[in-house]
Length: 116
Image (cartoon, rainbow, N blue to C red):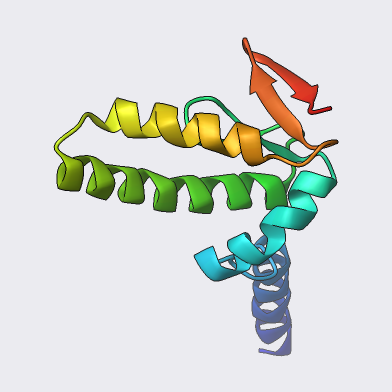
């Protein structure tokens, strides 16, 4: 009986340690965005979405959550203005790259470059 309880406890511990410490939500992703950009983990792309420059669990989560929110907002804006989503994405991408701080990554012609 004690051995079975021990095995169950051990299995639960292994499972708990294999899961991410805490699932990130959009608010946490937004708060982490500046830091991940400063660390060179993520950058802006001409298509209006973030891209992963260096893959880490955090950079992947930040990009996924923020891009999902951007995608929804772009669709809303396109519908509201009766234009194509691709047009909204292109405008947003251009503005995001223009506003990117020097030293942060931007994707130009498929290549990640530090903005100067």
